[in-house]
Length: 139
Image (cartoon, rainbow, N blue to C red; front, side, top):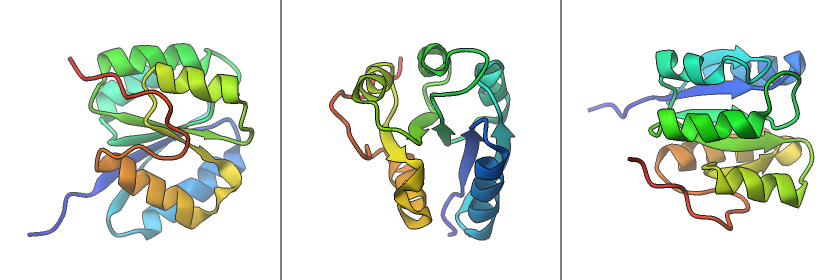
C-alpha cells in the first residue's frame, strides 16, 4: 500500500524562495506542493480550504503579522503543522512562534535536504530545529 503523500504550503514574500520550494517539493514523490502565499493575510482561510499537512511560514512578511496568524492557525486548523522558515534566527521570534504552536524552526539557508527532512519529520509528528516549547495539543 503506498504511503500517504505530504501536502505542503509555503508562505513567504520572496517569489524566488516560493518558486524554489515549489519546484523542489514537486520533484519529491512523497510530497505535494499546494502552492504559496506571499503574506499571512488569508493564511487561515487558505489552510482551512487546502488542508496542508505542513506549512513553511516565514515570520517577516508584509501584511498580517505571521505570529498572530500562527496563533489563529493553531486554534482553527490543528491538523496542519507549521515550521517557522526564516532567514534570521531571532531567538525571541522563534520562541514566540513555538509558544504559539509551531512544530519547529528551519533556517532558509539550511540546505534543501534539511528543509525536506524537516517537512517529513513534522508530518510524522516530530519537532525539528529549536524546540523549547511543546506543541499545543489539538482540541
